[in-house]
Amino acid sequence: MSGRRWPLNVGADDYVVKPFSGEHLAARIAALLRRAGPQSAAVVMSVAGLSIGLARREALLDGRRLELSRREFDLLAYLAARPGEVISRRELLTEVWRQSYGD
Image 1 (cartoon, one colour):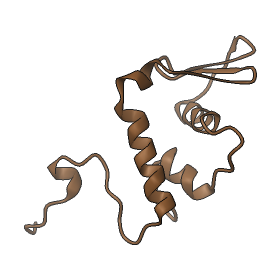
Image 2 (cartoon, helix red, strand yellow):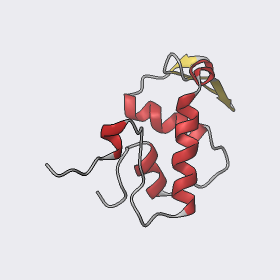
Image 3 (cartoon, rainbow, N blue to C red):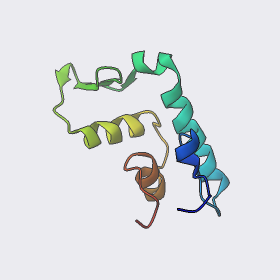
């Protein structure tokens, strides 16, 4: 192993490989800020008849519990936090699937 120190091995939570866009960097920062605060665990989002409890990982539609896989819940919560926005495939792969675009 070389003397190079990788960011994740020396305490970083995340890193971005060059080249990257400003949009990608802003999305990564926003995701880290959402996960960083203790208040984020208590958040309940409501969109129309949909209610999403992030701490309990529970989604209700018109009062009825939805049976969702972990990935389905993550995707639903990500989209519900951005009502009216168009979300790119690249952003979904990066933020929900935790994959670099093209993997």
